[in-house]
Image 1 (spheres, rainbow, N blue to C red):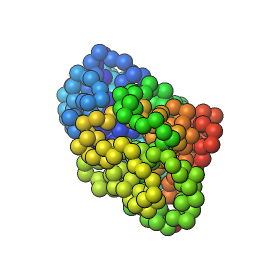
Image 2 (image 1 turned 180 degrees about the vertical axis):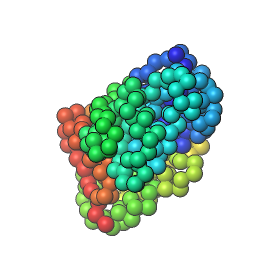
Image 3 (image 1 turned 90 degrees about the vertical axis):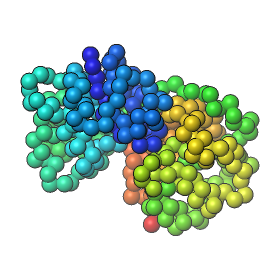
Amino acid sequence: MRTAFLGSYGFGNLGDELCLIDALKQFPTEDAWVFSARREFTERFVKVQGWFKTRAELWALKPDRIVLGGGGVGFWPSLRDSLHWMYDPSRGEREVECHVYNIGVGKITHPDWGSDQIVQNVLTNCASFTVRDHVSRWLCLEWPFKREPGLTFYPERKLAADMTLAALMPDRPLLGVSITGQRTMLEALKHNIERIRPVLSQFRGYGIVPIISTNHQWEAEEDDVLGFNTFADLFLRDYEIVLPQFLDKAWWHENLTPLRLKGIISKCNFLVSQRKHNIIHAIGSNVPFLAIHPAEDDSLLRIIYSLHAEIAPLSGFLSLSK
């Protein structure tokens, strides 16, 4: 069965590539073809038969099955566009099995969403439709398409860690730190300095591990090196940063993979993270964490709600006010 995999792959986010690894595992096939904005990035993590970048290339493959395979694609207009890609331009000349798998969904209010006939056709007729958390499911139930999604509970959390780089980590207490370069987050950090400093004081003497999971090629705000450096300048001047090579983008691109990142997180004693999939790695590795985020962003709280029974003791969250 020739299977095409759609998703936010190739943009520089190891969390999205983790979702691809899981989707390939959940939908096994001997003939896998993957969308990637940068094949040279994604092919470091998965071995497949081929690649495509356009809708025309997708349908030229004549796939038997299409999987929209995980990640935070469920927002306007990304989800609409992805579902349009899954709609067979031959309109019924042959059947294609479609799956919408393990996606995160935001609230969609655009007036064209509910009246889009292609979206309705794909969601109504797809062979399976699942989302990763309770809030995503509740939001889907607001749609007029009469299709209730199943829940996956972030199955990528169960993927085995690759411990290759963990051997570089020193034998001492370690605090992993993962912060985005998003403007709203950097402003929130500066506005909440007196709330954050007491939290970090409990980790005096810990080595600081930069947890870099996203180096986007086109979006300046999706730069975790910038985020970490800003956080370190504000809060970590008296701490020792271990493994500084993680901040070297060339080294990162050469050495980091989604599951090697999980191996690094699994060796930390505690994680402070704004990145969703680094929280997922911590939960899958039984590492306690602090989910830190701008107050208006509920994405980390969704994880905590849906996976609360699996979270390590001493974990928590810190919502940063404006």
